[in-house]
Length: 104
Image (tube, rainbow, N blue to C red):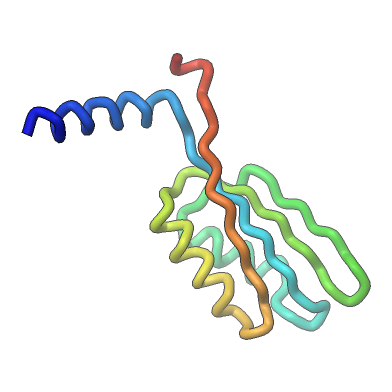
């Protein structure tokens, strides 16, 4: 039991020193959901959009959306919600851990 308590104390200390963000990479055609539908889905997930980059490549748009304020499970649920907007949307998510120097 001592090990589990020690681990949870260490984990909470790590939570205070690090923050997690998630970057969603979406590839969709010009006739697929617009940025407004994506934004609506993001808002319903309570995710904080830190950065949103849209590139046009031929007839496709590539969105790179970095969000914070949600955990891994919420990020997986958000990925599913984004992918469900259209069966042709391709979504990949990166989970990133950042060291917060202000908390150290």
